[in-house]
Each structure stands twice: as C-alpha cells, then as structure tokens.
Length: 133
Image (spheres, rainbow, N blue to C red):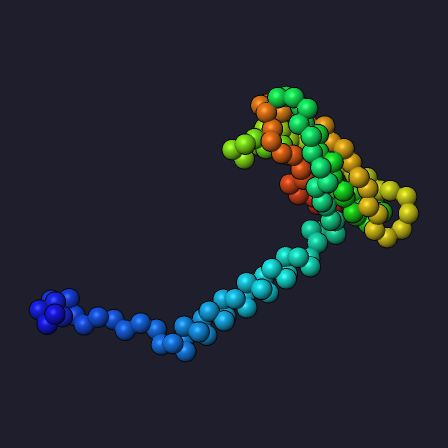
C-alpha cells in the first residue's frame, strides 16, 4: 500500500457525514419547491388537459382536449400525434377565440389530426395566449 501511496498520493477523503446530509436535504428541498412551482403555475393564463384520443386509421387520429382560458382571450394550442417511438406523426394548431361569459371558461374540443403513419397517442403539446382583450 505504501508504494501506491508514494506513486499516486494519499486517497482523498470523502465528504463529511454532515455535509452529505445537508446536500441531500438541500437537493430534496429544491426538488419539492420546483415541483410545487410547476404544479401551481399556469401557462400564460391558459390551462389545458388531454381528455382522450382515438386512432382511426394509419392516417387519421383524434384528440379530445379541455381548454380553460379567460373568456376574452384568444389562445393557440399545439395538438400532436405521436408514434410508438415518440416521433411526431401529426400536428395541428388549434386557435380558440373569445367566448361568451366572464372569467375563466372551460371548453372541450375534438381535434382531427392527419398523420404520416400510425399514431399511438394524441394530445395537447402546449397552449399560449396570443391576444388578450
């Protein structure tokens, strides 16, 4: 062992137990705060949720999505169809204009997607407000 120590130097000491525990606690705390932030914020004043999808043929799929937005806002949502290997095989931009009522409105849409090949899933990728009255 002494010849290895002479050649390569003494082994490095690991982190102290207290330092290791503090780093783990800090990492877990940051993860919890990040998850909390992501679950409590909305994307530009619009919320969306995949409701269901149906693969009709190798060239057609539908996605049923729920979009909640301010009644006076216009939003654009990107709806996509994915293959078994998670490649995008269909894409459509859904534009939702102002609706009647005040405050947040929730509307369900059935979006037809033409696909390049057989899709295995379809749903909303993202939504954003493009015009707020």
